[in-house]
Image (cartoon, rainbow, N blue to C red; front, side, top):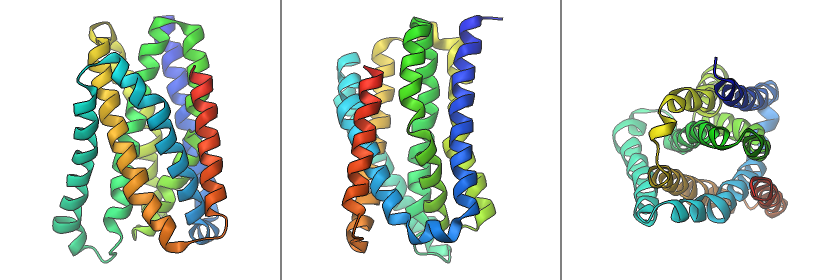
Length: 243
């Protein structure tokens, strides 16, 4: 079997495991998590927005001239999804925060799937480069699993469903992205990958800027700014490791 494929899948599986550990840990301490969700949201907003602006967006612009258009498409796509959920689905749901958890889960799921695609690309280019990049990407998997679980809990889902949906969105999607994309990687041109990265960045900026930060401002927790700063610091580390 292709050695590069095995290493690519191993990286995806490790990312899945790290995310799953985050989901498991927070599910054991769900009540504590609910009380401190604002800090996780602040941290996540710092990571998602910073990584998008510092790495994903510039990289997508570098790879495709059409990236700016698809950055807007990604942002608007998740805005429309949010409106659709609010109007046609969440009105029938007991929790008014229904879309609040579902939309970030969709955005994180798409991003995690794209992580798997990126693994396929970078390991195909160079195993050493792939390992360096994978170290940086795995750094954000643990808090990503935690945040996805907590947001779903806040949306009204019970612990069991929140764990399952968080696993499907944030964990298993990464190795799935690697598995699906690897056979086609030789046909995936840089401009096409740049477009996909731009859509992913648009989705993540939407999640961070319009879902997470407004809720953080509403709560005005004492150390929320510090938590966001830690997220930004992690993002800088990720970018430096990718570099």
